[in-house]
Each structure stands twice: as C-alpha cells, then as structure tokens.
Amino acid sequence: MRIDVRNPALAELYKAFGAETCVFITACNPNGVLLSDGENLKLQEQLLRELGVRSLDYLPGEGKHPTGNWPGEPSFLVFGLSLEAAKTLGRRFHQNAVVWCGSDAIPQLLILR
Image (cartoon, helix red, strand yellow):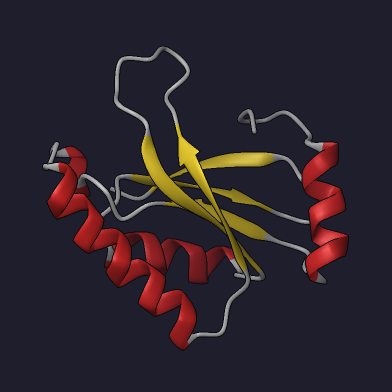
C-alpha cells in the first residue's frame, strides 16, 4: 500500500472479506520508542488477542517506512473498522499513526498524536 494511492488489490480484499474499510496497524514501538523484539512481540500478541475478542478479520503484514529509516514492524491489516474505531485502537496501543482505508481503497495516514 502507498499513502494516497488507490490500491485495486485492496478493493479485491474488501470483496473477499465482505468489508468496506480497513486499518493497517501495529502495536510495536509505542510512542515511536524502539523496543526489543521480545517486547514488541508481547505487544503484538496483545493486539492479536484484541482482534480475536472483537472477532475481526485480518491479514498479517509488515509496515515499512518508504525511506527505510525505520525498521519494518509486524502489522495487521484489519477489516471492517470505522475511522473512529481505527483511531481508538491505534491510541490504545500508543501508536503515533495508523493507515486507514475507506471504501475508495485509498490508504490515508492518520496521525494520532
């Protein structure tokens, strides 16, 4: 996914998952502070449990900054969350930003802090 660029493959995933929205989110490195792999794994497991409790469909992925100046982070593409729910989830896991996509399948960077 590229920010502000329509993603036809994402539109197809919407059909497959019966969704009209999604959020790309991680629990790693809260507040932009680099943590160890072990600490990040624990946070990702907490996020995964949250997705399970909510019975949300998701796919695993990896978030990478386009400049490569930040390490890739394990992430989830979560289907069916509203804009407000995506913001709330990102804030709950102390993320600076999440990537949210509406029905147009155009990823938007949402700054949360």
